[in-house]
Image 1 (cartoon, helix red, strand yellow):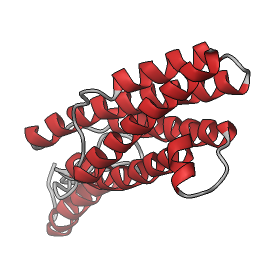
Image 2 (cartoon, helix red, strand yellow):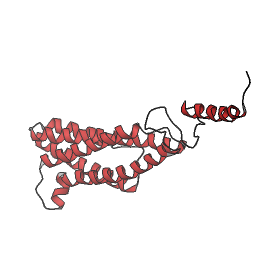
Image 3 (cartoon, one colour):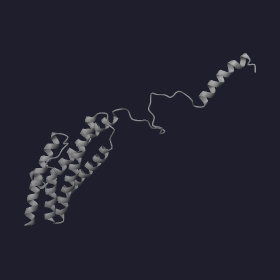
Image 4 (spheres, one colour):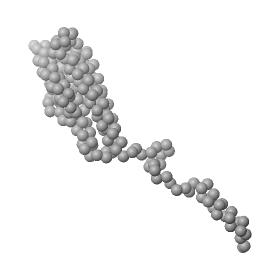
Length: 199
């Protein structure tokens, strides 16, 4: 078959048109796709950034809630010359426990990390959050026992909270260390008061 000069010009143009219309284009390597429509993989180091941001904000929030719990203990209310109410202590402790639970659940999902140090720091902080939610739950249990007139139970819960706070790991800063010591002292006073009410 003889090809005329006109067809020789049209044929390459037609071939290029077929390639582009069939979607056979060169992939764009500037973005990384997961194959899921509308979703791209996060940039490197985003897990590290997410952790550091949450670490800072959660640390400040937990410190505030620790202070709230401390202010509700009998010894502290006496210093501030305000009435002590076991319901206030229970509420503050439950709010602290809830916050620690939420941060623990969120923090454990962060990853993969680019820097191993951040992953190790996260793991230590998770231990701290576990300590906080355990002790806060025990303090709430103590206040609940006191409200029900079960002073022996209240004492037992308070002693458990005190043990939980004895040697915590992953403490995020000196302000937390100070607050934990204050709460420990307040727990000592609370235990003595519950012991006295049992007699």
